[in-house]
Image 1 (tube, rainbow, N blue to C red):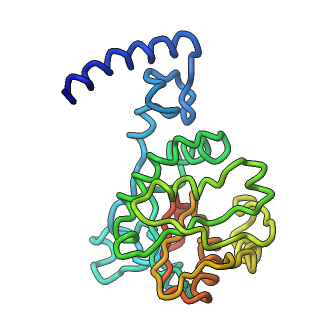
Image 2 (image 1 turned 30 degrees about the horizontal axis):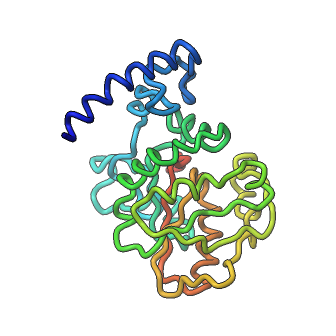
Length: 251
């Protein structure tokens, strides 16, 4: 019966796709080409399949791609930036680099209001960040300031988090508005988010392993600022999982 029902739905979906294509002529939210199957979502299959996921070797701390084992040897496990820095996030992972189709899909969710993209992004994040999610107690979305959330209508990090296979707790609040990190030079980003976050009243993370969730990590300043608050509230460990990551080119 299940197979028969599925077969019966396929012709209906094809008809719906054909009608939507003719009547509305929707385009892909990432590449802006016409959608052949608009009922399948606002991004075409070609854009999803063109996403280049990170592959090992990756930095143990931030998740940046490392040179091949042949170049650096099996004992090198962290990138130069993480070797130089004092990081409180123990491990970070992302689907891939903040570029190409992945960048456009994140933008379509964040700025285009295509909230349905949160689910497939979360599925890709769960696959890329399996080691980050393993053994964790809860996911905490990086919060938006109330003014930004009111303007956008939703928090993209929270939308993604609710589709991950882990409990979600809204443990943090943003207590002051900050400039967009993408508009700032790297050396100003840590100062921009310093003391921008605080714990929500009545929420406990004591003794917990927490995974911070966000859409993009650039220098890691935002997740580091959030992690310091969570660790100060008693969290045992803080990790980070994002949809995309701006890769450091320093060597």
